Amino acid sequence: MKAPWFEYYAPATLDEALKMLGDADLDGRVLAGGQSLMPMLNLRVADPAMLVDINGIPGLDGIEENADTLSVGALVRHADILNSPAVRARWPLLAEAVTQVAHPAIRNRGTVCGSVAHNDPAAEAPSILATLDGTVIIASAEGRRELPAEEFSQGMLSTALEPGEMVVGLRYRRPPEGTGSGFVEFARRLGDFAIAGAAALLTMRDGVCERARLTILGMGDGPVRACEAEDMLTGKTLANGAAREAFEAAAAAVKAAVDPAEDVHATSGYRRHLTGVMTIRALEKALARAGGGE
Amino acid sequence: MAREKAIEVTVNGITHRKTVSVRTSLADFLRDHLYLTGTHIGCEHGVCGACTVSVNGKAVRSCLMLAVQADAKQITTIEGLRDENGEWNEMQKAFFENFALQCGYCTPGFLTSAIELLRENPDPSEAEIREYLSGNICRCSGYQAIIDAVQAAAAATRAQRQA
Image 1 (cartoon, rainbow over the protein chains, first blue to last red):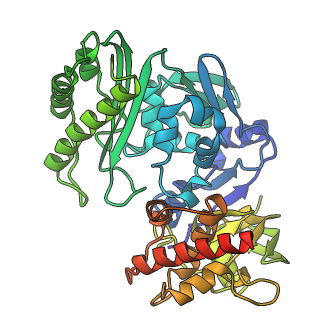
Image 2: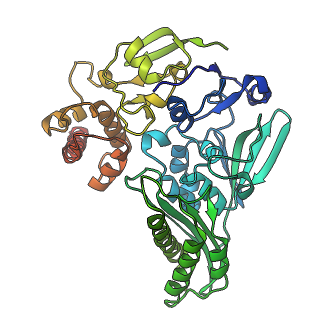
Image 3: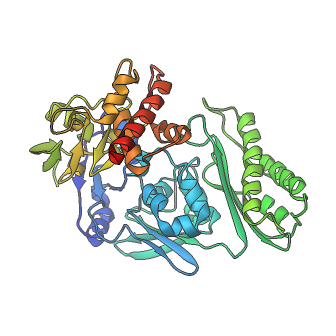
């Protein structure tokens, strides 16, 4: 179908954009990459009175790396992440996950912040933000605030964004020294939304897991942090072949905790099974990259 | 702010000044306003890849971009792939020689994606080609011939560069 009627506004500054978004009578929506919003308009499941196109606003396309963090602006595309030398060299979880975000032509337009603001449970960006203890930077005409990823996500396609607010940036926290990462997902066609997936970080010292992060995608109402499995892994010896048993126990805990929906792509039981498989594969990758825990 | 906007878009080297409805997609603009009907519309929500065109040198779904967003941009469609002498480019030739099209509906999108692939990676493996073209759907399911064509075009382009 074709998009419904709307007013279109392309402000030259962020202040101007926030002013437009802050006027409730205008009923504005942010148009960034458009790779989720445009399909929703064409399918007529979204019907805003006005689009505020931020693509012409300077200063929103930066990727900045500090000692402890990586920050990305509202106009950073998935392809920019993929091509960033800093990400490729030092943010392996992000680099690995972004290769599975849709297809090249979508990655050329779609933004990371847009994907987080859209909060599809099967999308990579919200899960990676949660796994890397990320923060969402939010602006409105009144000022700025920041929320941790887990507070920002409020369920299927919904977030803590208030009317008049927009996501202006994300900040990922660098994992500690000795951390290995793994990202896996299962989809019928490469680049499609994941039927199930998992992102894992394991921080190893002398064969013992000091810290674990595990996020499941494709389930529930948003990215699901598998806290119980994280706790089970923390403090465990994973060296010398002990990992298999620990990972299987973690996968069993994850499978018991998730409540997958049934749809045309997969039954609930199949999704639950896949979640266990994805959990083990992500943890195995993370352990191998942390040096096998030796 | 209005429901119509004047834009200036350069398509295949020709600059067009048009007033368009702000909700018009780039795909509809190319087809219905410029009569460049080589850009095909399949799904209109970014899944099939048939409408892929090049915007400022990057492959983009033209059904997911508004015509007003193409203001001041350079666009290449299937109609702009021939060189200045009217010759097909290597990818077009390779598609023809390898029977990489049947009904032809998906072909403009495949060509745009495949050309971008070779720009980024002049010598892709079969797996890399399959991965890169995963966002384009061919419902005649002629994928193997398409892969063969991309490999042939890659070899021809490399040979030309060495000559």
